[in-house]
Amino acid sequence: MVATVQRKRIEILVDTPLVPKIIGYAKQVDISGWSVIKIASGGGREGRWQHDEITGAAAKSIILMIANEEKAGQLTDALAPLLDSHSLLLTIANVEVVRGDRF
Image 1: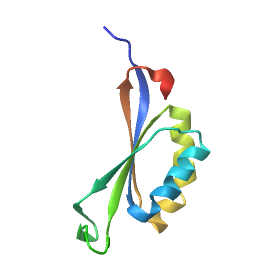
Image 2: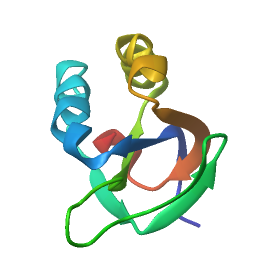
Image 3: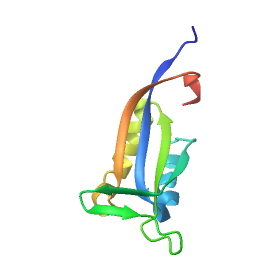
């Protein structure tokens, strides 16, 4: 069986125009890999929203990253001031990864 190691899976739901800013924070704490997933619609405490293809209004994305515990903590600390002001949804979960030295 292939060996795995535990890392942190970080998901950040963010308004799409803020994606470069969030990736900048990831780079500052030496998280080198990420994926951006476009979200078509959703809902939450403030109601339902849907991406408007024409204007881009309410466009949201998920930024997905895998990192070790230390880097995940550093990113969380860096993003803490933005959680309320930019309505970020930040989740962190334990995952098992192959080739853990890459994260």
